[in-house]
Image (cartoon, rainbow, N blue to C red; front, side, top):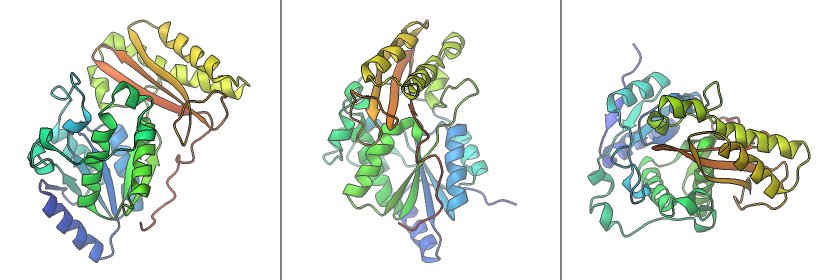
Length: 300
């Protein structure tokens, strides 16, 4: 019979277990999540399981990354389903801490935070000013508990991926950050836990975001070099569809995330659109990303 996934709720238990695994020469793979696991998360876990020996999945809806009026209380939660998805995909350990475990003095009393301001000030950071400090703080705590590992993140949240890579490098975390391709529905919609908010009518229209970004990439490959022209093309495509409300579209440098005036094949295209309760984000590279494949295990 396949091993049953172990659920750990205390950080000290997690650290002790993983230190024991490493003492036996086992490599640790780590997939941090906010739960409501879907096929995209399962693919991250499967990739981690293929390249490491012990895969840990954390499930924690982190209050620090939600701004005022955002969907913290309504964010979808499915602990039993999360366990099933994680176990089926090859996870050995699930870390499901309480808020008290992660923030023992309370979320309002957290005095120490981590931020990468230059990368966080644009796009998602401009729309959600406190978001990335919350992400970086919780991931820093999780990396501290997990220890040396390979940490797997989806490219759907490409800005987050870039920020966490820089945080790992700047703060010398013993973590190898691995980006994995976005998992999509057949019509192009990127998988997201927030897709559950979409009504049937909104779900039918939601792929317009990916279509707009893809049209922008095609325009650049066809010779359009003015980034403003590409932005207008993407925005007009989204605005022409019913039900959606454009938050932003951007043509940015794939590494620095800074907006470009001249669109090149190294650019990355980003967008965010609101459909009713759901705020969906997506991005595409103009040419295939260097993170589209996992190069295999490396000790951090």
